[in-house]
Length: 245
Image 1 (cartoon, helix red, strand yellow):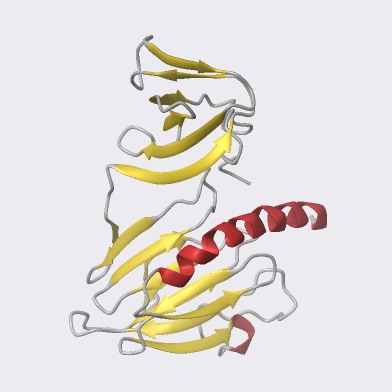
Image 2 (tube, helix red, strand yellow; image 1 turned 60 degrees about the vertical axis):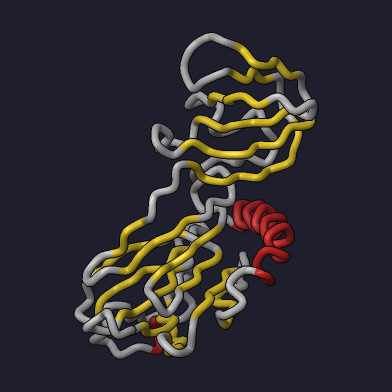
């Protein structure tokens, strides 16, 4: 387990270094704190007008609280990060951070009665005073996925994008083929190993399993990379990581 977490830590450190400049300039109106530095750096951004920080670990909570835990040495320490409320929400919302059993951080949004409104797996979590939530990070997906959500009365809705932006400048890990479309046999380019490429986008409409990527060659041609179930563990593009544990 220690070896696994060391590998995961290295991968997340690479992500944190490349994402730092983006964190510094994104959402300048929000305050930002670190809620976890044990194996990865997890950022929480908030507006003090609508969010009140709590910062209580699960072992610090009353035994009657649904998030209470008895052992502060447990591997998975859940934390109540804060409470959120605005004039469009009748009841305040609690934001809970869970580091996950295998370094899979997520933020859990609950109502005060304990009902879970939604879960957001993320290394970066930003909540605006209008109830809009933004998240980013490589958590059980193949790239740094940026997402947008909207808080409603009793649920959390993701604002669907036509594509997920990837923006990964990398090289091929093995020979790959780029196609004109996500189906069909028309080939745009056949690239050798160690060829420079940029992974631009991930298809979202028909890509629940993250198998279709729009890729630009070093020359400037653009085509679709199709991944199979086997290639999602070790992809032909360096930096597209396995999407699970």
